[in-house]
Image (cartoon, rainbow, N blue to C red; front, side, top):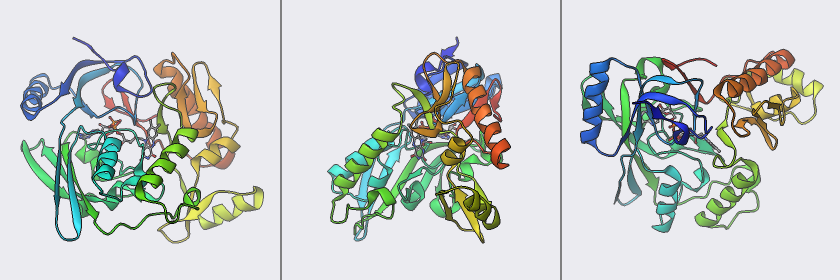
Length: 337
Ligand SMILES: Cc1cc2nc3c(=O)[nH]c(=O)nc-3n(C[C@H](O)[C@H](O)[C@H](O)COP(=O)(O)OP(=O)(O)OC[C@H]3O[C@@H](n4cnc5c(N)ncnc54)[C@H](O)[C@@H]3O)c2cc1C
């Protein structure tokens, strides 16, 4: 029986999968895998659907990960927090704060589950999931065994990890993550909008970041979206100098990689005339152009058209092809925009 995904994708798109299962325990996971093998259909694991765009109905099986549970341990120097993959990551941050475990606060209010956090190595306000990851526990579908992938083997990078590599899609289901958080807390205030917080505690930093995020980002319960739609592109130093000679206040910062500069995709989109874009019921958010939105009642095609329009306007204006950060799924599985 078709499984409606409207409440399982934060774009709020009314799409269906051929089958869907909400996974609460390992026994159920095993049962669903039998079904996947029997039918030969493609499958997708979803957490809270806050980083996905379905362009049409999916002719496969969706597993909604709701494996829950926390385990806490410590040694002289570190707290170790193991989260089952279906736990909400922001809830985990607040739980840690309430237990006196500080360090995760800069990742406040990023939607989604612990199990999805390593996939794109979530990050914000100068912190990344990889700063705290000890290992990722996976069900390896090639041998049907649980194993641990150490953080140093996860190949974490800017919004990427081994879990995004084509050869690993459909190979692993992330079942848990373990965080390693130093007991000696040092606030991370290396981010412009956190200036003025010196002396503040972890809970105050969490609150300030939550307030900033709420003022800048659309609440998916009100305006459908999946956060930043595109990644910030990296260009070479000469290209950056040319931009700086043509525009004022070009946001960019030097990254690893000789002379390479990361640009703000939102700025490029705004300068390409797509701020507050409206195409039918889809468009971009007026306070942050990098967010493609469902203004209400949008079809998948409207969202896809808006995102493609943004990409082509930026390409025409700057010669830069924006790459989606959001994972895009069509009838048979992951696909290009
Ligand atoms: C308003 C808003 C703000 C956001 N802000 C940020 C931000 O500041 N920084 C940031 O990094 N991201 C941000 N995001 C994106 C999103 O929050 C993250 O990507 C988050 O990790 C997605 O979690 P999820 O559980 O919703 O994953 P889903 O959207 O359900 O899945 C994302 C991908 O991970 C895969 N996946 C999910 N769970 C598993 C699993 N257990 N095993 C294997 N694969 C799995 C899915 O197949 C899919 O490819 C934002 C999104 C929104 C809507």
